[in-house]
Image (cartoon, rainbow over all chains, first blue to last red):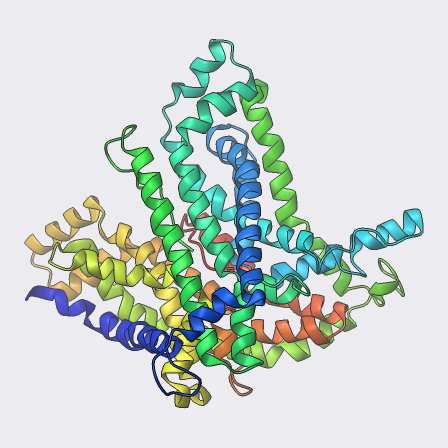
Length: 283
Length: 267
């Protein structure tokens, strides 16, 4: 048997703390009302209820929008941090890691401090123009900003690994061949970093779909799936409904992580036979 | 990392990158001074430092935060202890042995990373409704949520070739397993171990998504209390409480970054 028993405590803990609860969650999602017979009613409601459909579409919309923004913003950042010789680039890298340690609710509160009704930006507008402008904390725009905030360090981390693995000549050669900076970014670096961008997108999307704290703090009208899960359990006490929504959300995040992760790995194969270990952490 | 361009100042590709990096860094840092500004303003809705600069919100915030901070610290301590007891042996096994089921074990360990925290919490509460009041579900949920990060940080450190060689030398010199562990293995993985522990600590201190369903009035964490302050308290107190909370997580997070152990939690 060998020393495999060393993993036994972990396996027992996972069985009790994760696997059994997930089975119970699945079973609950298939039950009618309080116990009773098996049914797909809870899943039917996810599709037929206008509110849930809306929440699903909202989740998809904000996840893709925030991911795209984060990729565009962080792509040049990763190249700079890995390739520049500026002495302060390490300090900038530390600054960029700050959002990692912050819970989603705190990030939501930051958006309120800037863009809430009494936030800094509307107050400055009041001072300068006599009118409060840009009080958008509780709108889609405010939530998008919050989501972008927590995506930044995640995307930067995942891209940095890939930039570090890039052959040194890539930028140099294209520059000596007369390419403009924009051409270098779009025609040289973008294709070379495509697998890393896809992996970063998968992590970023999955994080956004699962994000609860930021949405709970900021959402007034713009409902997303995790909020509907919380509301169906704590407000209307429909555990079956909450369970089916959780299963849908879990399948969605897992499919994105595994699916896009696979695509990214395949895109990596022809370039580097030794599969890159730069995929980095998962949310 | 050897720099590509010794004179990077002049390269326009990197100049674009520098601009983006400064913009992103300012975006990441800007909330921190604003937080202090709001927390020290007597009457924030009337403007910056309206009514003068005051320390009363920070004092009031600390009074509110203190019991929950101590609860969160105790919880993080327990989470750390269980993580070490369960995760260190498993990480050692994954790093050192090739066995049937190793891939399955690694996939199992990483499973919580793919599941939204709120779903983990809901699953736990539906499975063990009677255990919620004791606070054990809160502990269990946080352990499940943090373990993948501990293992992922420790496995590469334990698998280093140089460490394996030192252990082999110690063995030929007659060191017992415990002697090797204490005098060779643990000192060699010191910084990874420290990064892993700090990581679990910050993740536990800041955890909200899993805790939201699992907390009880008697087992209330600091982030849960922050959330209710955001909903009900005045903005200055909420800002003061948040600033105090950041004292617990940001220094640890910077230390993790310096130790090279960045890993990503849920938002």
